[in-house]
Each structure stands twice: as C-alpha cells, then as structure tokens.
Length: 452
Image (cartoon, rainbow, N blue to C red; front, side, top):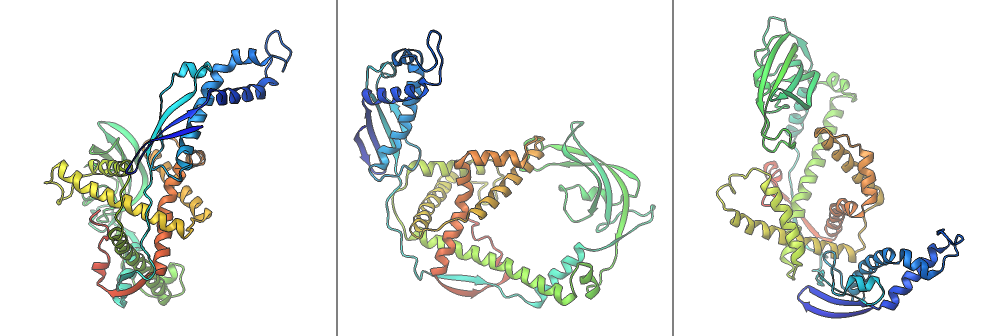
C-alpha cells in the first residue's frame, strides 16, 4: 500500500491511497483457495475445480467484497500509521476505474479525507480551586418532608353517595380516552385512584371532577400539550369518558410513632433520620451539579484549540433539533432563528471542546467505566425505550432492544460517554481544592446549567 499526503491544512487531512493490482489478485487467489474445497461445480469433483475456472465463476463478486474490505481497512490505516485520529469516519472516493480493478487490469487508487482530533496539552487539574455550595438541613426541613410523606400516605373514607367530590378528595374512576371518536393506546384505566388537586393527570382533567358524585358519568375534555412526548397525542383534543365509582374524603393524619410503624419503621425518630439522610443525599447531588458546572467553566476557560468542524456541526444540529421540537421560553421567543443559531453554536463549541478535554484527561488518568455499571445503564435504557415504544402502540420488548445494543458497539458507546464523563469529573474533584460555601436552599436548587 502506498499513501501520499495531499492536504494538511488545520485539522483537515487528505490522502491518496494506492493498492497494487498484484496485491488484490493475491487476496482474491487466497479467498478462492479457501472456498475451493467447499464448492462442487458441474463437471468437476468436489474441490477439484481449477483456480482459473473458479476465478471466472466467482472472481468479480469476491473482488467487490475484497475492495470494500480493503478500502475500509486502509482508510483508517492511512491515519493510524501517522498517529492521527479521525474525528469522524474517513470519507473515501474512488479515482480509478472500478471495472478495470475488478478485472485485475488496474491498481486500486482512491482519495480519503477526514478531520482529525486536535492534539493539545490539557491544563493541570491538581489543586484546582473550586467553591462547593452547601445548604444546611434544619429540623423544619425534615418536618416539612415528613408532613409530605404523611399527606402522600393519607387514608381516605367513603363519602355518602349524595355528597359531591371536593378538592383534596380521592375519587376511584374508570376512564376511556378517545380522539375524534377513536380510542387511543394508553388512554384506558380501571379502578384508578385519583386525588383531586394533585395534578397527577393531564392539565384540566381533575378540575372537571370536582363536584362529581359516586356512580356518575362525566365526559372530561382536555388538550394534550404540544410536547407531550407522543406523536399520536401531541397537541390533540381528547375526550375521556369517566365513570366515578366512589368518592372518598381525607382523614386527619397524626404524625407519631404509630404512623411511622405503618410505614414499616421503628418509630418517628427512625422516620426522621431516614428523611434527613435522603435530604442530605439530594443536597449533595445538587452541590455536585453546581461544582461540576464551575469545574467545566474553568476547563473551558483554560483551553483554546481548533475543533473539528464536523463535530461542532453534529453537536449543533442535535441541539437545534431539540430547540425546534420544544416551545420557546420567554427569553428566546422574541429572537430570530439566526440569533438563536449563533447562541446555540457557541454552546455546541463549548460542549465539543469540553468533551475532548475530559476525554484526554480521562485517557491520561486511565479512567474506566466498570462493566457492571455500563451493563446496568444499558438495561435501564432498554427498559425506557421499550416503555416509549409501548406508548406508541408498538410491541418492542427490552430484550429486543438489548439485542440491538449487543450488535451495535456505537450505540453502547453513546451510553458509556456520559458515565465516563462523570467518572472523569469525580477524578478531577478528588484532586481539586474544594471550599464549602453556605447558601440558601433556594440558591442550591437553581439549575446550574440553566443557560444551556
């Protein structure tokens, strides 16, 4: 194989690759020799057909396969031999006559081009100074959460059949949803317990059941949000035929040892301890999100190198597709598409740069994603996708999706990427100089990535 470099501008690389016809013919002869003993042709005993005859019969088909394999292999080898890593798959373009190559009368010659990943020296992360926001947990915080648990586990008692349902009551209902008179998948339920005012169903549903009596029939009219998550339901007007089977009034809740025991705990002190532990876990997670954002800001500020345009374009296109499929918030609704594209391209540039920086830091530190963690993530993703397909009325099992992932390493890599990023962030934070900063719970709960 002969490789001639034609372009080396910035991150763009272009090579001309030549593979002699003799080398192609040798590969073809080796493949024919391999199948010679396995085929039986008319007029020849099995395995006795001469090579020239086999080449006449199967040569063109086999050579087409060989050319595809060689182009795929040598495209990457042209970069690897020069210690270059393509940012995206190399793009080959045949420059010699394909028929002449297949007939063994011409060398294989093609051009291949791709952008390469930039080579850079990542900033030192030893002792990087970061402030970690923390919010203290008060007894009032714990009591508030315990009260919410009590309300969620509140008991209800049946109202008289003549009594109307009030806000806060529980109704037991059967319902069937339809759009333009036709039932839709996932729109049916039986013996469903619904607390009025809980906002657990689509907007406008519960309000229409206030005032209902047991054994009454009500047509509930609602409109699905434009971004509901189902192409069949997004923005559609629907009617739910509801049968109110029972109306129940809430009973008073006493928060004491007996209540805690009903939850399977030892006493009220045990319940409060578990609640405090849960709050602590949640707030640590929020603190980490803020300190991660601060770290990414430092990494972004500490690096400036050329980025592969193809990677930035791919990231931008993904972001822009999400923007187009979502409702614009108040901040963006008055901006033109060009203005928004400029802003989101900056975000794409930041994401690509940070991805490369974290990947390089992780590579040098030999950060690994444990196989059991990756396997668990793949299984969880398969379950989520199966549930989505079920909402669309399609029968796709988690096992079907797992099989797809097993056969597609690139799909597995997409699941591994965020896991790897989190482990690299953990690695850096372990080496960082962290200083706790007390903040209010309101500040801690703010979205650190709100701008993105």
